[in-house]
Image (cartoon, rainbow, N blue to C red; front, side, top):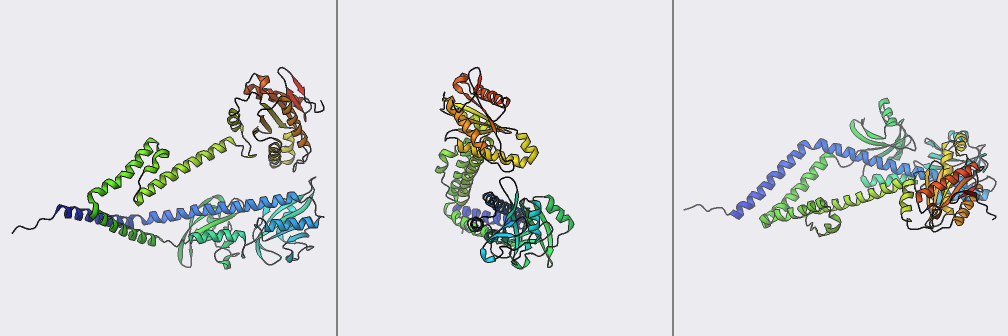
Length: 524
């Protein structure tokens, strides 16, 4: 009797299932043998990247808190209006919510106002190192952690107070609790809860600023000299340490506002757990493949390859925008690849948009730079009735030499704001470099442009600039109609008029005619 022959269908099924099972076990074996170190590195790199993100977040928080203090300081012109001081300290504490308490302290170290008032510190003279440092330096700074007069472990941010003529009044400062609830602790808690990782904030000398365990806050972590040097000289990295007989590999990132570092270690997902989880997922996936193989062994390969081939063809033809939706990603990997292509396209578009904005924007003032001006001016190319104003700060070098480049930058930023305030919607306000600004005024007569230049000149004279006090500007005005419709010639004529204004004693507006120049007379 002849032996019963095995059916081809059964052979194909056994061959497919056996091949899948064998390949899966070989893959799992390779993963367990070779991928452990790679997974450890991947987890560590993930921790480092996450530490960088946290460092950026806290840097942003501290920077915003300092800007809020600076704004409040700009609103306080004297220490005699107690209602004004109370109102500003309450607003600063309650509205942004960055600080747990806010103080206004005079130059003698005596508290003039506080929020909350329940602290009852008004009239008390401070003797802490932080207050002495604030008064001595007369600059904004962030202190190292210390125990406040109220007994709280805090960091203190301060901003000096000056009168309009530059006389030092004292400082306004805010405290952020480190052992109690604060916006900083809320930010950190949200982050480490979302990752279930051990997160600490540690200074370069090992002082623990923040920890999931409040009892560790304020204690010292033992750091060897080489690690301290590494923390102070690098923005991010890794190091190994031992605690209670157990070795830890820690990823870290440094803050820029302070000498603090974000330490991330001890993620709950261990390498072994990841390997086991990967193996289990692969086994479940194997069972699904076996079932599908038994049902559609010949059709499956074609259906699996079809969406991948279609995606590859679309990427090669750069036809993603028009036809990506037509891809039938009916299984997990194809769907993930489709999403990845969509996300990559969006990321590229966003990066291109960001690069375009950065390329056209002056980073200091936020105005258009020369390139941005040229692009926006091209949109007005058909407007024959446009004018341009060239503005330059008088004696700007003296401001930098006398008060420093930070004061000069402050003047540039303030002037940029005044120019935007004075201009209309549709006008192009740009900084061409240094202290020179160019205004393009579409659909504007020459006399109207001269009047606007005069308003700007008068507005600048009547504005007090921080550190620099009063400044003046010179302006040159030119019209496209007087320059043969050539924008380059109009810009050159405006620049020539600006130099005429400089030569005429500065603080004036000169109008460029077809062949000559004339001083603008607002009374005419």
